[in-house]
Amino acid sequence: MQMKEKDKATKKRAGLITLFKLLVFTAVIWTLYFQLRNVDWEHAKGLEIKHWWALVLALLLLVPNLWMEFLKWKIITAPLNVDAKLVKNAFWAGVASGFMSPNGWGNFLGRLIFFQRRQTIYIIFTTSLANLSQLIPTLLFGLFAVLLKYGNTNALWISTSIGAVVILLFYFFGDYLLPQKRSRLPFVRRLQSIRGRYQQLKWPFLAFSSIRFLVFSLQYALLFVTFGYTDFWFLITQIWLIYLFTSFIPSLWSGKVLIRETAALFVFAGTVVSVPDVIVSSIIIYLINIALPAFMSSFIWLPKRKK
Image (tube, rainbow, N blue to C red; front, side, top):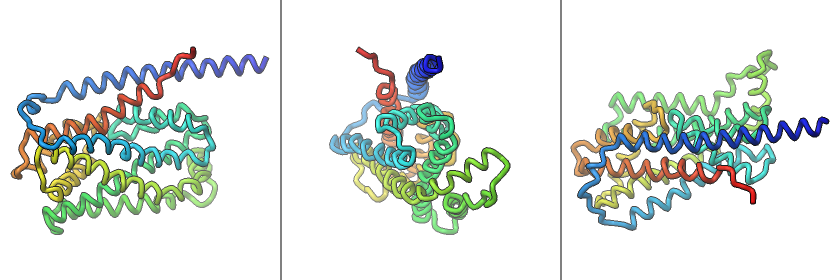
């Protein structure tokens, strides 16, 4: 009798997961349409692609970009001793849910459906820590770009420096805010119980996030090279500024396609880079790094029919 009830519960859970997957697939397609319909495609007319190799390389660099993010997820799941296929499916589910959440921070939502309830706090907390680690290189490289462009007396440099110090302190020492004694609050007790597991993840997270930041900065710069711009150092430092600005602007969807366009136009204003090239490069980087992985994720983790 207990076996039958267990089988029923398992089938019910499988049905709910399948329904959720289909809903996410629909939501991803709708979100992609919603983002792209607001884009002014008139700017793409008349542009001349001068270096196809740069465009192809920018697309190929999506692989190490996603791989760095997957490695962060892989070390999160290592202590849980779960199946490799489950780890992969949970990762892609996180890509889909992150696409539909503010600044992509909702990636833990898709991941959670593959794990037991007792692992919820660990998944949410470590995924959030991994997301925070991605902000640190954005701040540090952005701070360097601000120093080059505006100097160290500018208000932007000062405020960014303060923000970077605060986030670094919170990232490395925030767990000391937890009481040493066993708390009466269930949520705090769960955090206390996983403290030893997540402390050792901080440096690997930061290493993978830094490499990933350099990769997607290179992708963005290569798109400008595609249209004939050759001052690579100038391009890369301006791109670090764009990522710095967009990191602190809330966005309903993770892509920030219109926000990135606006920030890019501001950063490149008064330079040799033309407005159409700025807008089209910003759209393409969105399509490669945000839209394409989200679209791929909808197919990779959708349920397959059994023959």
